[in-house]
Amino acid sequence: MQSEDEVYKKLHKEIDERMPIDFPAHQSGLEIKILKLLFTPEEAAIAIHLSALPEPLDKIYKRVTKSGISISKERLEELLNNLNEKGAIQGGGSVYDKKHNRRRYRLLPWAIGIFEYQLGRVTKEFAELAEDYSLGVFYKEFHNKNKHGQMRTIPIEKSLSPDYTVSTYDNIRDIIAIKVDKIAIMNCVCREQHEILEEPCELSSTRRCCVMFNDAAERRINDGIGKEVSKEEFFEILKKYQKEGFVLQPENSQNPHFMCVCCGCCCGVLKMAKQYPKPAEYYSNNFYAQSDPELCNGCGTCVKRCQMDAITLNNEKAIVDLDRCIGCGNCVPTCGMNAMKLYKKDKSVTPPKSSGRMYVKMMMKKRGILGTLKMLGKMLSGRKV
Image 1: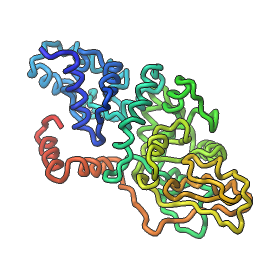
Image 2: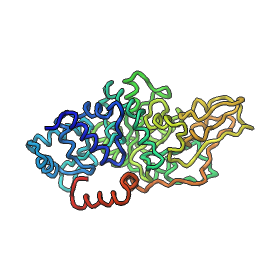
Image 3: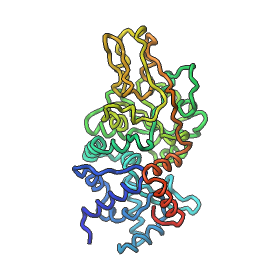
Image 4: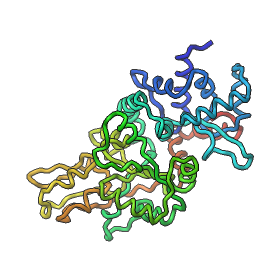
């Protein structure tokens, strides 16, 4: 019989190897401590047998019992539903099988996944472990120059110049107008985490900073976590976001399911990026800011607005460090001298057309062509992926 620690180590390995984004081990074993908070030993032993792709109860039951675990189908369903309720796995929602009217279940990555699903459930112990883990090792996986990122930065509206032709995927108003039918706003798990850590947001008291689109919005509305807003209402909310200086970070696809509205003090994505001396190298974005020294009066407003610590004053002139600037545009509309402007990069990065294609690109980077083909073979044959 395997020991309790062995069960959690196996579960960690499953998540690390099967998800598009790794779940790296921390030298202090923080990933195991996190799993122990979310899974009982019995639940962990069951979760080991879940796939990266959603599967129905019957299929999971056959795999679990074949492994030697003695359990009734009713008990298995109870455990899986409980794990879904805890945000430790996914069951229902986007993975619900409408055709056959049945739940399906799958593993979740650490992020974007398990961490975000802890919204409303964050304890102080979890908040501390998640912070130490993310800033300790996970940042190297989430922000990796050799891998396709899950999120990107787009400029705020007021920073965009009419001199540039801006693609739909770089303009939030165009994304909403063309790509979105339903919108939900919800609380931000990062801000919840930092409030529990007694580190409240320094930028704003706004808490509904997580925006969901279309099917994702529908799910969040139905489960009572998200508040539905019309496009007109959201554009008014967006003005507030931009006025307060938030960074807009949608999913890295042309049809994003979500957009994070981020500050530099709470947002895990920005905080992880700032672990690097040159964070701009790890970002998917198409713009950068620069200041005209002939116009700048050294007021320092842009320094305070920058969430990436990319702007400093030198001889009472604003200097933008392009190694840190991620092109959010927050420094532009509040520059009273019109010295700060956003410029389009010579080489633009076009995001994948859909979330599905984004994750395929991530898997291709992780497993290579041969590994991805093997995975597709398993999918077609109905085996665990």
